[in-house]
Every structure is written in C-alpha cells, then in structure tokens.
Image (cartoon, rainbow, N blue to C red; front, side):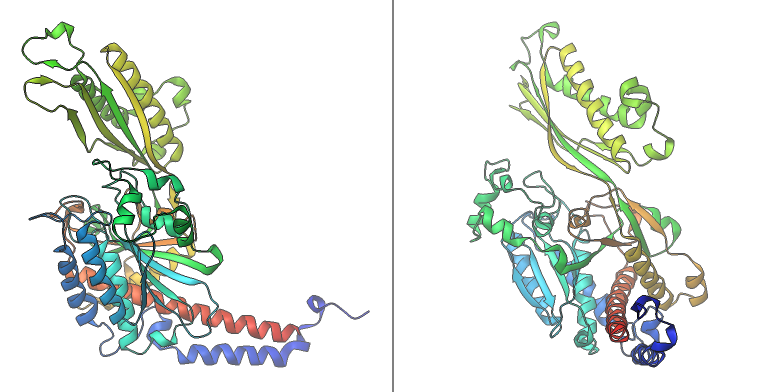
Length: 507
C-alpha cells in the first residue's frame, strides 16, 4: 500500500519545497528592509511629519471646534455638530483614497478594498462623540491617526500593494452621554445591539428611534441588524487612543500597548421622599431624599476604598486578593433633584453610579453589595429607593498576537523619532498597560480579536478641555499605525504564498 501523504519521505518534496522557499524569499526581498524591521519606508526620511504630525494635529483642532456647545466641546449621538463632523471626516477619508459610507446607526466607514481580495478585513476605529465640556483628543485621535496613516500609504504608493481590506470606522456613540447607554455605534457593527435600544429615551423623552428618523435613517430593527458584520469577514480590530491616565507620562514613553480593558457597570439610583417647605417641616419629621442620597454616595466611596470592611461574609468568601481588588474604582458623576429649588425639600433625587474593575467577580460583588447597602440605608431614613442597571460589560482581554505586533510597531516608531537615541529607544521596553476606561474595542471584541495602542497624555487628564497630547506623540502614534498596517499586509501575503505552495507540494 502506498504511504499516506503525511508519511512520505521529505525528499519527495524537495523540488517543490525549494520553489516554496524561493517564492517566500523573493517576496520578502521585495519588502523594504525598514518594513521587515517593523517600520515602513515612508518616503524621504521615512517619517512624513507633514501628514502624521502637522496635518493630523490641525485636523484634531478642526474637529475640536465642531460643537453643539458655545465655548466648550460637546458632540453627542447624531446631534447637529455630529452631522457637521460627519461631512468633514468623510472628506478626509476620501482624500486618503478610501470608499466611504454612513451606516444606519450613523457610523462613518472608509474602506480600501484590494482587487480580487477575499481576505478578512483589518478594522481600525474609535469614536467621534464626546462628553460634555470635552477635550479634542478623546476618540478623535484614533480616527484621524488612522486616516493619516492610510493617506501616507497612498502618497507613497503602498496602499495599492496591501493584500487585505483595511477599513477605518468613526463610531457615532461610545460615551453614552445622551442616552446613558454606551457603544451604540460599535455594538451595532459587532451585532450585539438589541432591538429594544430604539425605545431608549434621553432626558427630553426623545428616543433613539426618534433621533434616527430625524436624521433620515430607517430606524427599524431590520436596519440595525443589517449593520452587523459577519465574523468571517473580519480578521481583527485595532484602536489608537489617548491613555487617559498618567502611567506613560511617568515612564517618559510616548506609546504603550494594552493587554486588557476593565469591566464596567453603570447604575441609576432613584431615591423618593416627601417634598415639603424648607422652613416649616421639622427636621425629625422629614423624609429627605437628598440626605439619603448623600449617605449612599459616601457609602459607595467607602465600599470601593475599603471593600473588605463592608462586604458580608457571603459576598467576600475570602477569595479576593490585593491584586484582584487593584484598579477598582467607583464614581458618582451626575446627581439630579426635583423640584430643585433652594426653599424646597426635594421630592426625588437620582444619581448615576459607575463601577469598574479588572476582575469581573469583584465588580459584580461590589454592585450586589452596594444595592444591598443602598436599600438598608434608605429603609433607615424612611425613604424609598431603587437601583436600576443601565449598562454592564465584562473585562476584555486584548489579543496577544496583535499586542505583540503593535508593540513592535510602537518600538520601531519611537526609535525613529528625531531627537531620540535609537539605542536608548530600542533598549526601552514598550509599556504594557491595563485600561480602566471603556473603549469601542470592548464591543468589537464580541466580533473579532482586538488590540489597542495608547498614546501618552499630560497629567493623565481626560474628559476635560485640559486634556493634552504632545504633537510629537501624535506623530509617533501615526508612524506606529502605518507600520502596523503595512506589516499586517506583509504577514498576510507571506502566509498566502506559504499556503498556496504547501497545497501544491501536497498535490
């Protein structure tokens, strides 16, 4: 009986293996040496400062001026400013050689599609919406850096040589400011946005469906379903984002890679009491929801600062280590009263709670414990309260392979930056961080593997007009991303040649 293909002696395939080796070595020889080392040869000095730094920074400033607020930056889901920003971003995408469209959730897409390519797409994105009184880097940096990186590849003639589709997505909503629910844009692309989202309303009573219709979108469950990307069509998702923390600045390094994103839960607490006259109701007879709410806020602070002192035995179970509790943070960011008058005891107070932790079990235990303590404190004060769950997302690990590739690209980019010793940059290890902030990558992880590149910011300040990223760090991020995109295409092309020749060798 003839031996199976797997058991045949290797010498039978030596001519074909030689062809395979020649094919791969020939392909690698056609790749610029700088690209093989992790840094693409981007023309001239290879750095393209005029696009990756100067133009990118100017565009960040331009987008930062498109606001619904007078004298401050505010751009929420499908607001008038968001619609104006959409037109600007589309023009930049087209200039970079991308085919553009806007989907039924207001996400902006710009895609390069190689001829006859059947490969999985590389998606790169971030969000175009902002918090109220925002800075100009959060979200926008990731969108504009991606567009700039692809523009450089177009200018240098390398865009046409990419072997896999590359798509930039500017997500319409990540912050969740308007509807108190995050990731409207990226969850729609990932296919995890529920149909019920259409009936969620903002403070004015306007629903998501209303807003979509106002902006000429279909606003139907079927339209939302059609936004979803098929998992087999997507190879990976990468996001560039300002760090929003102080670690990179402390390490004096412009870029870092992310190994995972903390899980988060958002709650709304409603406390009902008895509304009354501030001057006539005796203190002992009051059912004051404001005082109760204040106690709940302090209780939350104590729970997150010293969790083991407030957790019950059943909740704690002795399984939490210092490591698992590290990174636990809790925030009350919004508090509203009714009727909100200086001479009236409020009838109702409601406030938001944001709980984040790297360990999902810790986060869920804190949520359960706070809910229990809130009901106890309210009973003690003879007021009614309820805790509503608005949003929950598990911790998200980043893909190790993508993280390694981004790490190489970041190191190469930093080494190439003017004024930085190549030897010192090469010797410095690219920092690997956890993200306490939520990102679109969390939603996209339900669709495909994800990776993130962090950019240093001053003082770790974010969600503030004071947030700041140095121009040269913007440059380094764009350079690293251009390197990563080209390397991803190179790896795909080499893998394709290896696979094709292996099939020939086996036939």
